[in-house]
Image (cartoon, rainbow, N blue to C red):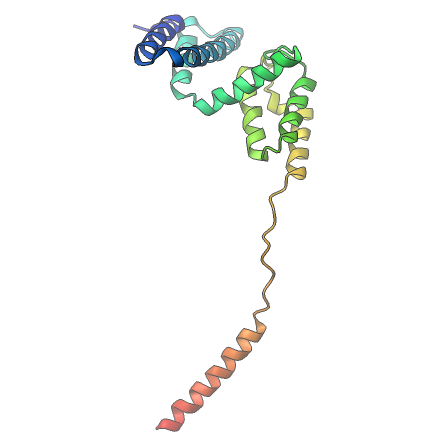
Length: 184
């Protein structure tokens, strides 16, 4: 028997509430709302691709089991940023996504973290012409630009000239051979 998404969410909610105290209730409610929002976004995308209800439920169940808290954190930050700017977080302009990535860069986030945010947004963003946001030329160029601006730091170790060491070792070898043969 395959449960629908709402039944799974209700069971999960009841379990978490029974395991928590009142001070944690708001946090748990927020987490479940975020999971439900992500699930509903993915549900819409699957239905647009003509997935059956049963296949969509199965996919969402597996997605919710595998979704890490990190991805949900990235999505929460995206949703909050969109809400503060009055943007639609599901089907906004690509320019809005570029502005969000720039906002992350201005907060001194690392390149890999910014790319993870882009991937999380890709999970819920409504695809236009069947394309993920990561394949749009403007997003690709912005990501490459962020990489170039945020290059890994070079090691501060100077290049060591090993020739003097080799010369000393050569002299030591000659001395060793000379002392070895003179002993006998």
